[in-house]
Length: 134
Image (cartoon, rainbow, N blue to C red; front, top):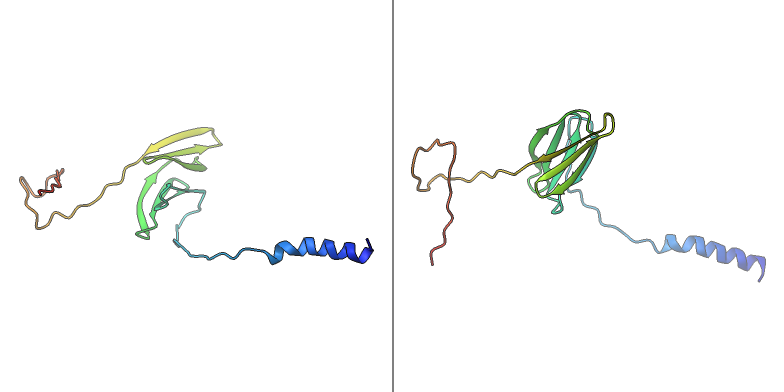
């Protein structure tokens, strides 16, 4: 095989992947100013909540609400975060070597205005029953 033919094959092999690249569509899901240095980030499997580890706190962001849901105070020594279960975060730190498993639960506000109720309106606990009579 001639030298020119060999060079042509080498160029084709090198340039072919560039010609066959895939295009991607990009959409920004969340843009937020944290206001603190970001150490680590994790999401839940449904990807509707983002957990951002900052020095001294875990910020919980909602991608659907585009807002901060809550702030969990933690020690500043933690440098990694992982999502474990539907209600647990694992925080680890290298210096000093530490681990902390945090359990959380989301609290939903239910509008009870114009609803029948029994007892004081400013009670600390409300029991809500959803029934479907057919």
